[in-house]
Length: 350
Image 1: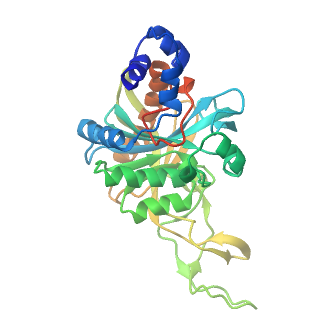
Image 2: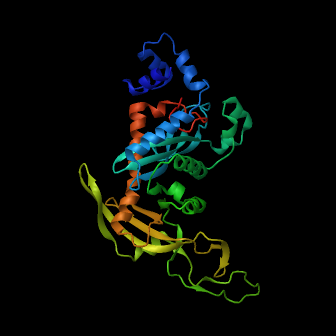
Image 3: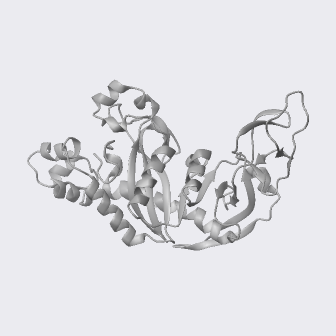
């Protein structure tokens, strides 16, 4: 059934669910095809290993990017595994959908999907009976956040020998200090989106002894100034027009500014009379983008301190290649017509 299933996915026809594919393939019934993708027992590991090897051969290398993202599959009803009202990036709003955490290996403008892993919202992860009824495998029933899923799959991809230079992710992942710290702990270069309100310190923030108080502080040194938002810190910087590559309709450009900062994601302490403030953490680049539409975006990156602004901009903008790949999989292979299988990390959906 596997060759028939693949033929159905890459063949003609708008609907890529099992029944219409079986009809186009000339099968008398769709039961055997449905059994193959829903309940047949087979080992996905060799096929996944082959996918990673092929992807690395095609686009892997030190100048490749590994893009971490997620994509939503809008659904009706409540029985598809992982379906729930949640934010759907493709729709720009909350909707009833499934969400897949994705890893895409890309070099220049060529993306190759290497991971699609189903995310289980709390309404599923906290309901053992529902998980059992839907046939979710035991190892997949542990609640995990999207960054946790992404890091586990990242480790699997690296263990397979896939080569890349920089990890990219949007603000949904970049807002997580543990996620950024885990990438740095693995010795990886990264560039991630953040919200404009992310607190940062200037890289040269002065550390001073805390002011005397009735309660002695266990913190030997504290920042002399308070952390400010990413938006506020870059407001007074010089913004330069940068062209990061040539598009099909001409050069792609926007205005960028960058400054070295220390992210306010260190230990939580009381600073300047305020509780729950954070000490300076890792020194990184803070990059702002002003688009012609007026929209502003902000990112952090641990690329070296001597990295040119154009290189920073090109890395940040390379993330959007995976959106095109998601759209093609939905339009050409019917990804959003399928029901994601929680037991298989990539390749097969049902």
